[in-house]
Image 1 (cartoon, rainbow, N blue to C red):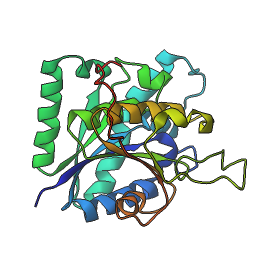
Image 2: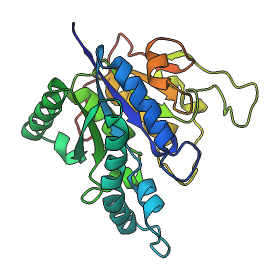
Image 3: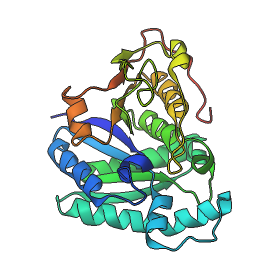
Image 4: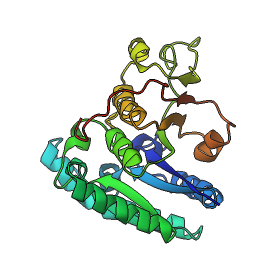
Length: 266
């Protein structure tokens, strides 16, 4: 049976489950879902959370908020985050592999081919690739998008069927649901040009990616005809239930008229 490739982008706000620390319970919920889905899908995870993990294990007082400080914290937190993933996933007989990438890995044919071959070989041998930006040598995630763009580039690279962007709300609303009780969830969208008025950013001090970075990621996927979901990671079973249509979320479906193919660095 053919297995479809899906990229799941999990941000810091999901992994911390509304706290300031990485939630083993949330990672366990993710593992439970992947264990159920592994016969149907090849799933690649793009995970943030390295800096939040460092703050959990190391006294960061006096480190400041500069980019070099964040790079150092990421270097401390990344192996600890992978250790948590490994410990929890192994309880469900799931094997993981770490892949640290930068946007330069998408810049030329050789690096793209090498990356694709590595990910495909891991999937072939039943390993779940867990991808993060290499913050020691690259800083774009630290400044801009909380891995939204990276997840889109990975999805296009491996010809994924879907990208699931996990957020802290149910999807895209016609107005901010945290401020307006009558906000309405938009279940399906193809016209990205018409939704700018719905975007309102919010910073909780943990993640860096807002809706603007998600829409930019969706545009990258649309150029390769990849469907994108934005789902609420606070709800149990959010991957499985979105794939099975058992929860409310926003589905972004590429229009019949495709955008021009963009360069990888766009």
